[in-house]
Image 1 (tube, rainbow, N blue to C red):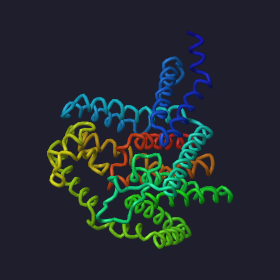
Image 2: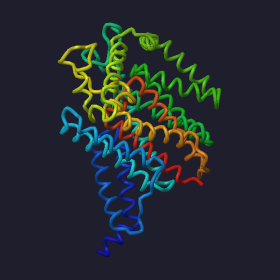
Image 3: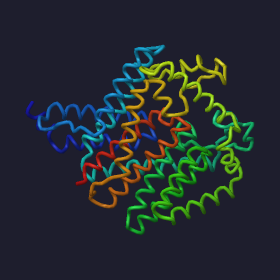
Image 4: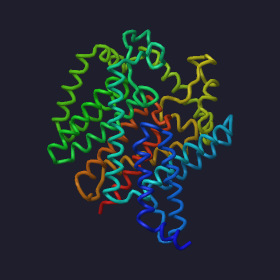
Length: 407
């Protein structure tokens, strides 16, 4: 027993947990199964450390209460679900996994070097994803039989990359996060060669983003970079204008899609509006406990006024905010949004003195990344994808880990 206690309090025990976080960070975008296994192993070691080391205590974050309410409301929604077993399985395997990720990061990634290693793992993973996107674009992905393109509105669009993610929209939301983190680092780092590498990575990520033809994500990153350029550095704004103008001039199909972004001109736009109307009615009918965790696809047919086709299954509301409010009620959904926006605010308006420009840039980038999730979430439920949600909770955990370094 003494040997176990000594191991629990040793540096090696903590290092094993950090390695698990690093593996989760690297494999989230590449192999979700490996990422989840790494998380589980790391959390088991963490529980062992927490149980055996009497000097180790849980450190509460400013959003502890919001997360607790979110979890409780998510569990309570199971009681009203059309299929309680299905909702319980999804809540247990998703919400619990998200919280495990957050806890593992905030309680164990506590030094600058550990944060840097996790960030590097995320960066290397992003490089692989971007490279895979270029590979698909160069060698071809025929979208003729895929559901990601409105063939009638855009008959010439035959290539939308998705890399290691499920579909182009999820990849695009992920790339927005990557670009935002790179922008934060670029803005704060002083080393010229480092800034050049960051700029090259950003350009490659932007090019890959254009290959997804995801209008919402493209508008989101344009708004973020444009606003940052206006407020902080006009050179960044000028670069955005030149790059965007060049890409649109070279790709008339992308230009055509972007021109329809604010118009109800294709089935995807019409469908979203109809789904939002139906989802608002769901919320009005079930404001307290919602319709049940993950039960949207079961309940939507009762409110469907657009598709009216039993063979078509719609699994989410294409809106983060409406989807959470519908499934777990107004209290639970608002608790999640409090956690999310509180973390975003702490990252963007940090008043602590951090160790160096690397941590300052990373914190700014994480804040901008959360802004991208918030904006993309208006037109798509980018958190429906499990790895995307795990990534969000990991990034939020990193925000608190970095802030803990400050004075």
